[in-house]
Length: 106
Ligand SMILES: [Zn+2]
Image 1 (cartoon, rainbow, N blue to C red):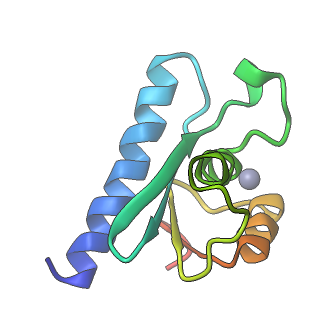
Image 2 (image 1 turned 90 degrees about the vertical axis):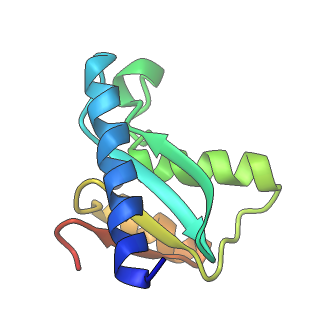
């Protein structure tokens, strides 16, 4: 699979997660953390479910990845997000060593 097709597929997965989250009563945001074409973790906006203003989809994906892989560092990763990440999520992704890709940020 070529890189543009992979980008499309991971972005579509983030959008699908966002749509599924809306169906469960959540906000329309999903994110997928990928390294070397492998999904490390994903997340959706859980702000209202967790009563946590920091529970954005990208942050949740990083939290899930950290718990699953036992590290806070994710150098060489790409975060595919259904929407343009906010400043908090951008900072978290930079601190984790990854880079964002989203529908609106190229
Ligand atoms: Zn955010």
